[in-house]
Length: 328
Image 1 (cartoon, one colour):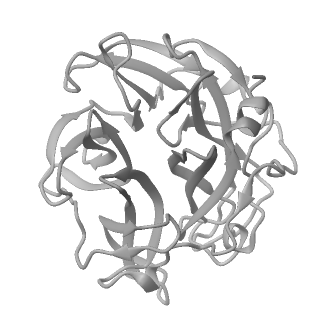
Image 2: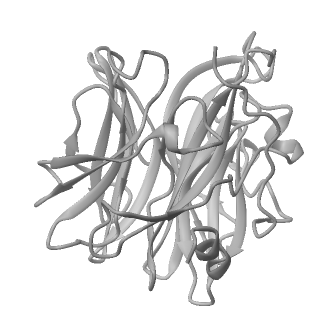
Image 3: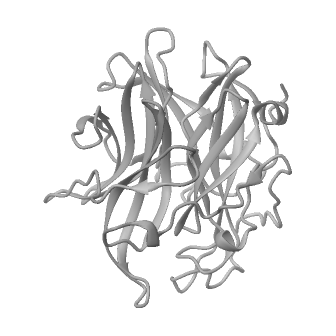
């Protein structure tokens, strides 16, 4: 029986944008039902978003498939969606790809994504220069997902955060943690090490995992993560007969030169489900899942997240406030 976490609140420094949700299925010019978990970055002078699209029938509460769509923006708030999805993979083994993250490294855009296969869940990394052609650089073995890349090499190596599924350890259940690995070429990964255990997050009683790709600050790498708590008393909170989980967002600071060192971590979530579009009327309510974070020159931090597995939203904060939450 999990220890019940109880009520959680967003930190006051986080401001939900008044235009929320900033992207919904209504703005997508092809079959779309649930638009969420957006990877967002700046590329060649514009904001670009890769979003998850689960399509089917909202009226019949039926989903038929998943692809990844693409949208552009001049201000990071108003988005223009491309007329067709930009990325999908499916064959006898691969069933779908989803939950993209976008990271620009040395002027080229990389996309991390999850891959459902007949033999387990994997994480993938692809490279694109035009968002029409993608070169898949690597796919993990099962079970792993929530890959996020750092936006530059550290000590000459590419670095990523990830969340394996160690189903035969940790006393079973969903006690999954955040790991860190490096690579000389984005294809072959090793030197893996536990970065943050779920037991160190007071607002989680189940799994944690990487959220948006980390951003560089003078005091360290600012990295968000998602945290899950389970409450058996929760009932029907979405399309399914029962949804007992709540997804919140945490933040930590990693050492600039050695991101395997956690410099500081906030003991409370920075975002917890509270707004109507986060707690009602969605596919899975009580869910906040960030996949994109941008640090503006002004110091404003834009955090893009999926709300209730249904729409794309935006919250902002001053980077100084976020660093203070991590003890810096």
